[in-house]
Image (cartoon, rainbow, N blue to C red; front, top):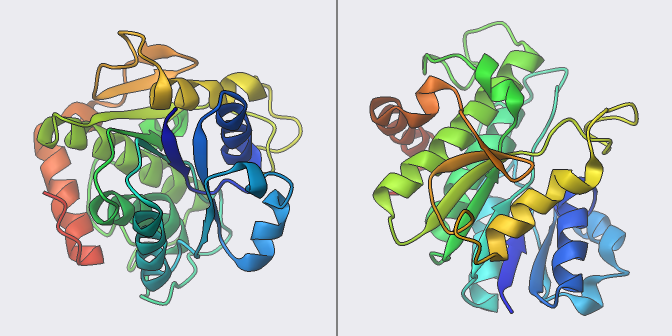
Length: 255
C-alpha cells in the first residue's frame, strides 16, 4: 500500500484518480481549495488518509497545504493534478501573480520544494504545452496583453519541464509529466472527445506500479505511452533558467 497526495482531488481527474487508488487499497490524502469545496468529497473522505485544504492561488495557503501534508507523514507519491484552464483575465493573486501561472506552475513548484521528498512525483501537463513560448520573458504576464490559451500552454510547458529537471537533479525520485488528454471533466467540457478513464489511469499507474516502464524517470506520457515533449522540456539550459525564475517568483529554492 502506498500513501499518495493528490492536489485538486474534489472533482474531475483528481477525484477519479483518488477513487481508483482507494479501490486498489492505497492511502490517498485528498486536497480541496476550501472547506466548502471539501464537501464534494464528503462521501470518500472517510476512506481516505485525510484531507488538506488551501487555495493554491495563494503562496501562504500553498505553504499551509505543504505543512498539512507533512503533518500527515511522508508520501510515497504526489500527483500534482490541480490546474486552471482558460481564465478570461490575468487575475491577481495575493502575491500579485497571474492566477493561471500561480495555480498551474508556481504551486506545484512550491509544493515540490516544501513537501517532504516523496519517492515519486507526477505533474499533469498536456498537449497544449507544445504551444508554450520558449521564452521566459514576462512569464507572469506583467507587461504582455493577456492571452488565456497562451498562458495555459506556457504553464503546462513549465510543469513538464519541472518534471524533467527534477529527474536530472533528484535521481532518487521518479518524476514524470502526463498528458491526460482532452477529457470530459468540468475543465474539459462535456463534449471533450478523449477517454475519461484513461485520463487518470496513467498517473495512478505511475504513482504505484512496479512495471519497469513506470519505475523509469523523466518522461512525458499519454495513456501509458511515452511521448516526445517540446524541445524545451528536455533542454537542461531551459530547465535551469526556468527553475531560477520560479525560485525568484516563489522564494523557494528547489535545488
